[in-house]
Image (tube, rainbow, N blue to C red; front, side, top):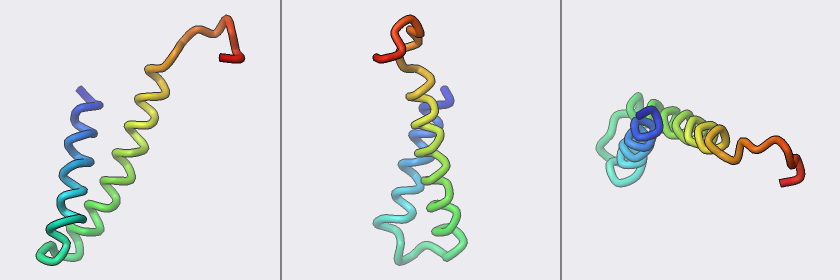
Length: 60
């Protein structure tokens, strides 16, 4: 659930920063850029934590 919420937040922030950049107020652009960075960080953390949990072979 958290992952899907993060994906939606990332996509909405991309819309605000991308095609709607000309009509968006400055505070919305700043918030959207911040939200995009935080959501990418959260997605990377979620993907890393859901990876291979086999600790028997540290080389893999």
